[in-house]
Image (cartoon, rainbow, N blue to C red; front, side, top):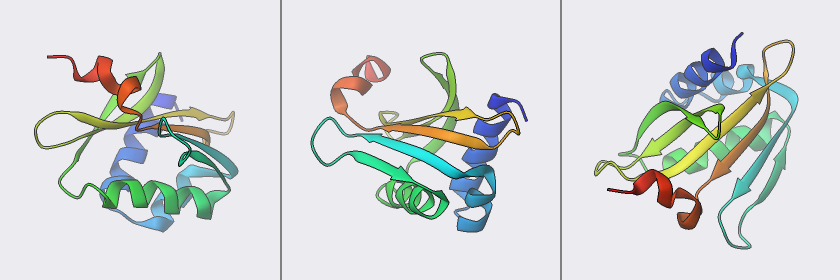
Length: 118
């Protein structure tokens, strides 16, 4: 599976949101780094922890739209509020078998500033 295809499949799974569908896209030892710009961020390892963290992020913004984007040259998903502001970015890396092995979720406003310039 190409990385762009993995991002599109992740978008569809997050939009569903079906934990089994999301989990099927992830490697068993998947790692998620959460960058909030403050001490509340952290790491999650393993399918169940990563699925819960991603779903929690999406549930916090039920009116948000998801969009496949490139984040620093990597495939990813933007989380956009109804006013168009990006409130989160998920970038991903796939393994040689095509499953997602690593994700980075950025919600730090200072790091999203470039995405939210008028």
